Image 1: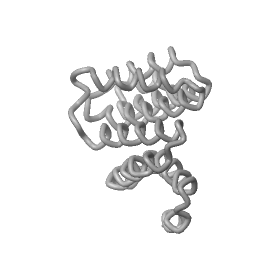
Image 2 (image 1 turned 120 degrees about the vertical axis):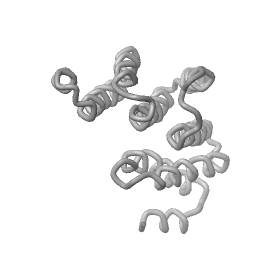
Image 3 (image 1 turned 90 degrees about the vertical axis):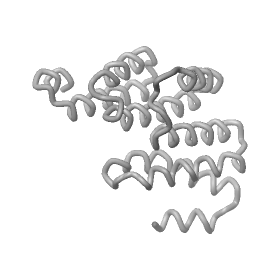
Image 4 (image 1 turned 60 degrees about the vertical axis):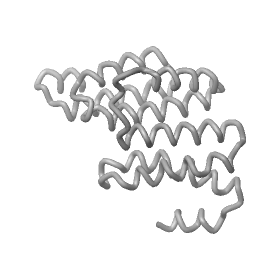
Length: 164
């Protein structure tokens, strides 16, 4: 699908196909393939066009690394990435990724009280995006935020968010 979209210069479908490939490789944990397709995705369009895809996939990659007990590797990679120049300033996608990853890392250490404000912020940032564009971000952030609410005994707030 990617090569077909590339042949006709259809950026939208190129982004979607590469995102699907990255997501698939995250699920089966093939890190080299993840990085390869993310680098292709980065080159498809402008920084503004690629941010929604790249930062969502970075969030998923971080979560995948943590689930595979590679917390230190995940944090080291994230710090290296954030230390690089020219990642595009401090737009909503960067803010969302940073707050989600901080919260997710804290959860992995059992620090749910500390994680809660980060995950809530990530979810609220996702809610600021237009509905269709923000849907995948809301799904990614809300379940981590909600499960944290359960861990810290905030069941009423959990129910309030689930009913929304």
